[in-house]
Amino acid sequence: MGEVRSRMVPRVLFEVRCPGCAALGWCPCAGCIASLAGPEPALVQGADSVALLFAHEGVGREFVHAFKYRGERAIARWLGDSLALAHLAARDATAAIDPTAIDAAAIDPAAIDPAAIDPAAIDPAAIDMVTWAPTTAAHRRARGFDQAETLARSTARALGVRPAKLLRRVGSAAQSGASREVRLAGPRFEGRSRAGGCRVLLVDDVVTTGATLRAATAALVGAGAQAVHVAACARRGRDRVPAAA
Ligand SMILES: [Zn+2]
Image (cartoon, rainbow, N blue to C red; front, side):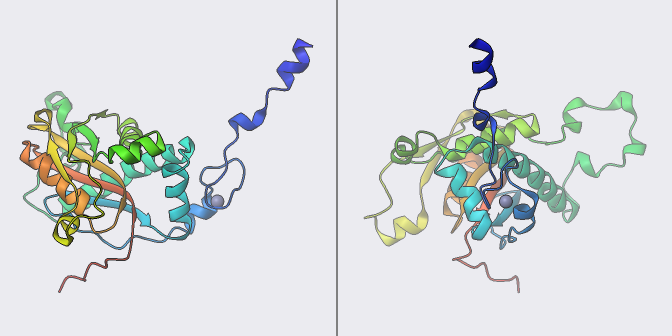
């Protein structure tokens, strides 16, 4: 009897499905990853670099919904890994076009005396903490978790950096009913003093107008953060950013 039961452990518990096409065994599958649409650029005033994974449409929207509304862990893990890689690429690209930026990744490894290396200078992430812009208390209650926090923790794990709650949402009232100016200004945040002197990676799920990330970046800078990098999964294309003249 015991043997039969042990053989009948429901394997479905360990199975994953691709949120894009429901294929069994991969989350997500290579075909869906290849079909992701590239994001339009987003400008986040005050941020040192901005990394975006894909457009919030088609398969990309399915990836976000699987994680945001159904709490699927496998896709949260993949998104965290991808955000970590996208952040490193965006940071290095930004550093490459700014000759005044001092970046450990830009140093020729052959020219380095190993004995003279400062361990802090070879941190692959070149950041101290990963944080997020907290969602409203109402959203957190409804979903049972803060999707931005989950993403930030997954990204921090991939980078080998600490996740830290560095922001507090000021006023939890919903944006609906507020004046147009207030809605356009987006939510307000307060940065914690722990952010002082730190290089921070700010993680979020979806970027629409960028108001949330802009407010969160300003709050971190206001709290004394030395650098604020931004990484988000999906870009909604409704508000197109004009091409640089
Ligand atoms: Zn798929």
